[in-house]
Image 1 (spheres, rainbow, N blue to C red):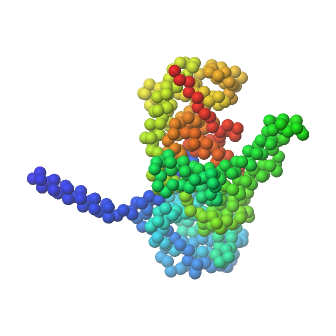
Image 2 (tube, rainbow, N blue to C red; image 1 turned 30 degrees about the vertical axis):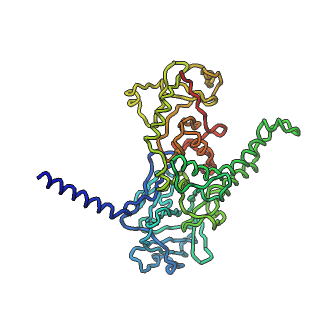
Image 3 (cartoon, helix red, strand yellow; image 1 turned 90 degrees about the vertical axis):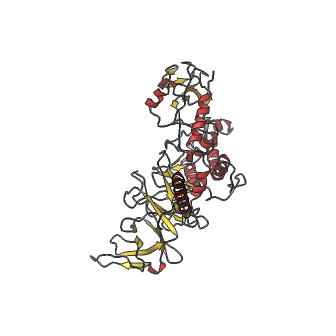
Length: 483
C-alpha cells in the first residue's frame, strides 16, 4: 500500500512538472517599473495569457468632417476589436482625423496613468494624466519593450484635443504630442563615449553589470555637467578674486541660466509621441510647442531608462537587468556589516545602530534600539553621531568631534529598494538632505541626474524618497567615530 501511494505521488509530481515545463512562455517577465520616491511602489510586466496589443491599419485613417449637431462616429474597419486615435483640429470639432487600430497577436500592451479603470499601473498624482502612456512588449522577443505617449480610454480611443500638438508625417499619417508630455532619459539615447564601456552581455556579477550600466548612463550626464560647472566656476566669488580685471564675483546671468537649461533640453530628456517617435524636449510644456524630430533615436526601453510623466518619474529595469541586481537580503547583510563597525556617539558614548526606512519604533525597541541610538550625520563634516543637544547655538550645530559648524544634522536610514542601488559596496555615503545611505557609486549616479520638476526646472533627487538634493553638496561622505 505504501509503495502504491508512493508511485501515485511520484507520477502526479512528474505529470505536473511536464505540464509546467510545457508552458515556458506563459508569465514571461518583460521587466519592472519602479516609481521614484516610493519604495515598493512598482509593477511587474509579465506576458499576458492572451495578447492585447494593437497595430495601426493605415487603410482606415480618415479625415472626418462632422456636420453641425450630428453625432460623430469613427470609421469602422474589419476588426472585431477596434481602437482609434482622434486628432481634433478646431474648437467646434467640425474637422477630425481618426486613425484606426486593430488587435496585434504578437504584442502585449500595458497602460499607465491616474485613472483606475482600464489602467494597469495607477499613479495617484494630480499632474499625471488619467491615461498617461502605454507600454508595448513583443511576446516572442521579450527584450523588445517600447513606450508610447497617451493611453486608450474606456471607449478604446485616444483623443488629442485642439491644444495638443498634431504632426503630419511625410507618409500622410498623423502623430501628436500630449499636453503634459511623456519624457524619457535612456542610457542609449546618446552616442557612445570612449570613457563609457559597453554593457557586458554576460556579466559575471551584479556589481559588474550595474557598474557597466552606470558608466553608460553617466557618460552623457558628465558631458552635460562640464559646461554647467564651467559657468559655476566663472561666476563664483573665488573665480572673481582670481580674475585680475575684476575684484567682484560675476553672478550667473539670465542668459547663462537659459544656456544651462538648453543643455538639459537638447542633451538629456527626450519626448515620446503618440506613435512612438522621439523629439527633443520642449522648452515648456505648453500648447503649440514641439521639439526637433530625432529619427536616429528610438522609443525602446533599455535597462535603466527613466520615464517622466509630469509629476512622476519611473525607472525601468529590464528582466535581464533584474537578474543582476542585489536582493533585499544582500542589502540587509551590508547594513549588518555597517553596524558591526560599532559607530560611537562621542557625547553619549554608546553604539549607534543603522536601520531601514519604514522601521517602526516598536520594532526598534524590541531589538534594544532607542531613539538616542539612531545615527545622524553633520552636513558639513560628515561625522556620524546621535541626535544630542550639545553644541547647538543660533541654529548651528557644532560637531563635538571636529568642532565644525553645520546648518543641519540629518537622520539616516537605508533605502531598501534593490533596483535603485547600483552595486553592493559598503554604505559609506548619504544623500543630502534626506539621509538615505548607499554606496559611493549609487549616490554619485543619482545626484548627477537632472530630474524634471513640476515647475519646469531640473533638479537631482533621492530615488528613495524624491527629496530634492542640496545644490552645493548633494552627497555626504560618512565618517564613523569608532571605539
